[in-house]
Length: 118
Length: 109
Image (cartoon, rainbow over the protein chains, first blue to last red):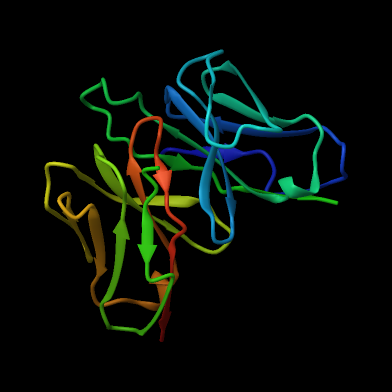
């Protein structure tokens, strides 16, 4: 089975702290994504990566950065956490994009990391 | 925005009844997907329907897609208490998979 593992299920941090959220997938997926989920807003894409060392901004990248040094690992970084970044963070991965005929577009999600910033 | 929007926001039914959730979107799509999320957990992919398909089945799930109306529906037949979850439609695929806010389904035993 595909497995996407997020390093922490629950974190509590203070305003101004640097926060690292780690995500590892074991299916050799090219694409990896970070979403945040807030009540009533659904999932919003923060950043994604389609290859090692490659990254693209999603819809809400402000206040976040990412790192993909290895294919299986995608990290989300909050340089200086703020209270409005309190949220559920979801990592996902998928096979390569639509130019590959075998791509389904299906996303595989981790269990989520619930971050509280005080 | 291609965001999918689900309707209703919440649905409460008895075990054994069918549950229908609808999704509308705004622009052309390659595919539409439905996901399920149990409380406090990650999302699990249920089914994908491509833009050239009209209907798809998977077990107790039936998905329809009407690209002329930019809408899709998810039908869960003979629902069970274990189907209690939030259900999301997602449009696009590839890099830009855009999710709606979800429908919360509660199935009473």
